[in-house]
Length: 212
Image (cartoon, rainbow, N blue to C red; front, side, top):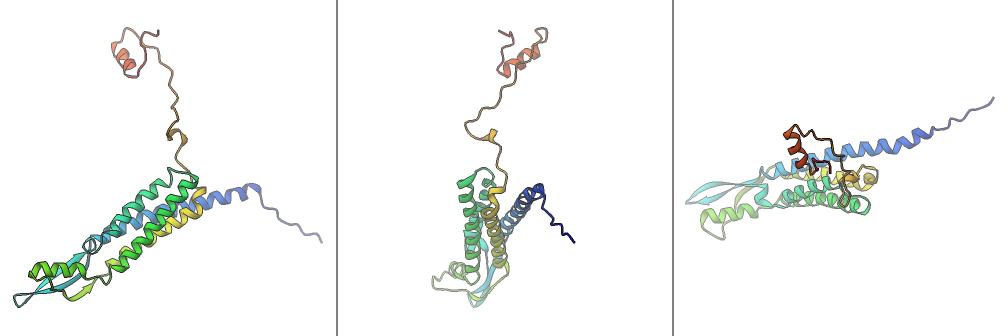
């Protein structure tokens, strides 16, 4: 009995890297954009709350993510810019931008987790409210929004890692948009001297309506 060994088709082997590149590109774009949106949204929400003692009573205080730390929002903007810039550069430049994208995500995670137990923003508000620089916030509690910001950072980090791994397979901006390339000039169309509007259009295009 003879056994026939299946030989993989060359086209299927060549198409496999292209398919993996398209899939990784779609996942990176989705995770990067979603992660930046989540991180920016989370920094606008209430991260911590507590009370300050004022004239024998308790005054409620709240702190948003931007009050606690401005790092996640700033790095989310950097991550979005890096995600777009990945397609404008090639080779070493793409690797550097992908690394920046991954570092932005990691920085968001670190800053958001550090803000989970940070009560300094509310302490400052307590001091300003009571007029006592030594006053501190009481009954300090934290919400889940810092963890949401950290999750957004994880998504941006994932996009950066995908760009580092599969970035060389992704398409780049067309060469005709690169600096130093000239766009092909269109040939001048004949102008009817009996129609003044065509003469003006030719002048606007930088053409000689006389044909000289």
